[in-house]
Amino acid sequence: QVQLQESGPGLVKPSETLSLTCAVSGYSISSGYYWGWIRQPPGKGLEWIGTIYHSGRSKYNPSLESRVTISVDTSKNQFSLKLSSVTAADTAVYYCARGGRDGYNRPFDSWGQGTLVTVSS
Amino acid sequence: SYELTQPPSVSVSPGQTASITCSGDKLGERYVCWYQQRPGQSPVLVIYQDSKRPSGIPERFSGSNSGNTATLTISGTQAMDEADYYCQAWDSSTGVFGGGTKLTVL
Image (cartoon, rainbow over all chains, first blue to last red; front, top):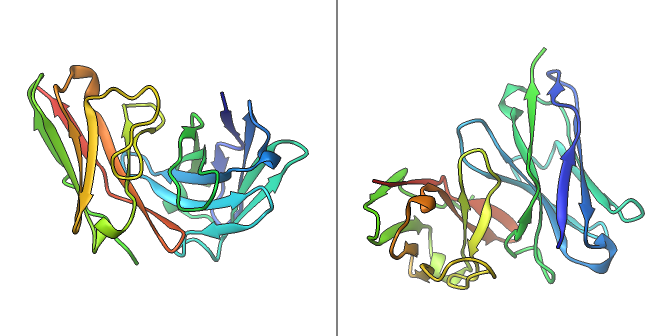
């Protein structure tokens, strides 16, 4: 059974870059599937950030696209999120998740436990 | 940008049927999925492709999608079903979530 685990700094200063990694176990990323990042501000709803395929092809939320980069490292079986020029509005629990096998437009069937990132000086 | 609208809250008595709606322009032409999120936990997929249940999801969860509205139905609602529920659809490979509905079982 696939498992996902987010890791990264829990505190980031305004204007800096948020960097998170999602380690995948129980499944080889290079075998396929799409992989995504979703976030949830405290007390609010879910927001899709972006999705990547093992080949490196990716799609991003248009509202974040200018600041987001998602990459994949098949040798380490992990994928990563970078969000630049962060503000307090980027404070949220960040989740990584597994998407579909055959396209971007598929549900996320396995999720990590989430990691809280706070943007504050 | 595409938007999905859910009621902020729905209440149901134990054993009764709960219905949570998700509205969007021509939503019936897209696949919709639903996630359950209990307090302090990660979301769990409960319905995909409008009406399919992943392995391990109880039969009391069902879904439909037509016109501009998708509906998640929970039959014989149990106390353990109290949670936030989110619908999701895709617009040109862009993921869109509804704002979420808090289901209260009282």
